[in-house]
Amino acid sequence: MTIIICNFEESLVSNLQALLNSKSSECRKLLYQFFNIQKKRIFARPRQVHISSELAQHQLYRFEKKSVISEIINKIKNGDDLNIYLSDKQNELDHIDLTLTVMGIHHFHLGDTIVQNGKRKGLVKGTKSLLFIKIEQQDAYFIDILSHDINTGFLNRRLLSIIYKNWPILLEDFRIDRENIKCREITDEEFSMVIQHRINTTYSPEEGVAYFLPGQLTSANTDSDNEDKISRFLTKLNDIEKSLKAKPDAIAKYIKNITGVKYNVLRFPIEIIDNCFVIKNVNSGIRWDLYMLPNGLWHIRPGSR
Image 1 (cartoon, rainbow, N blue to C red):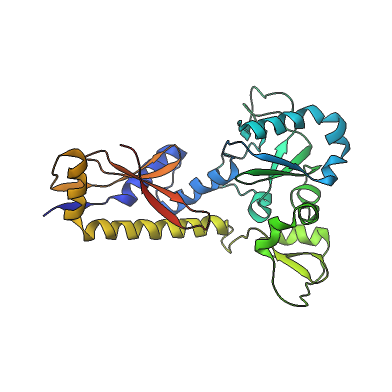
Image 2: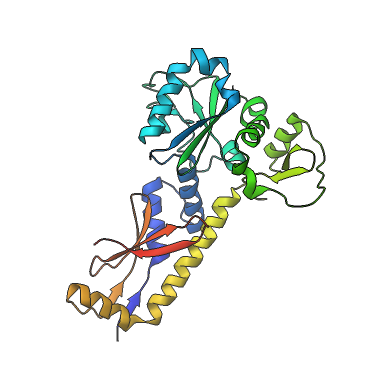
């Protein structure tokens, strides 16, 4: 009889603590910190660039910051690292980027030199004017240049209005599908304030049209998207553990067919390799990779040894 040992949580906590340099020992907290960092940073891959009509007319885009923005565009098209342009808080485990959380939009500093010391060491010099870009898997949508201010910049409804005018398809998944819908009219300042007070709201670009915001905050002041991702991930781990323990002899036979060795005790911890979760059989080195599908569900597939 083959014995299956799945020390998922213990190994997950250990790996996340080492990766994040976190003092937390609580699995869900560590997962939140991991996904929070992943969300704030941008994965390097070639993307198609789209420029809004509003940005195309902006004086900083056309003149003063033209060379810097051209460099950002080329880096995006080539799939180069973009994180040097982001906030110096991108690696803070518990910091919430409100613009990214509720609107799904990154902000880029437009400095043209790399800082050698201080909190922006290794990043471009911070600027008072920020370029707001919505980064998707295959595309980058250049929205506007706004001030480094919570009301007139980070939480400015103009960002959503420009998306609605130029690429309304990006908001379609969040459309409130009700006839003759009416939302209470609020000012730009009120819109910013309710979000700062962690109150979820809606966006109405014109009469009869309304959207939920792309992201929401929980009552515990956390990113609801990350919370959902964690719940789905832990559910998947529980299902995998049940599947492994339900058919221990079949698992042992599968591993023997690959390695030629019959193991009586099989151990399955979780490792994190290249920021990906991997279930690895300690005995044989055989691994299975966990990855998230576009619909938010987690899937498992055989990986390399």
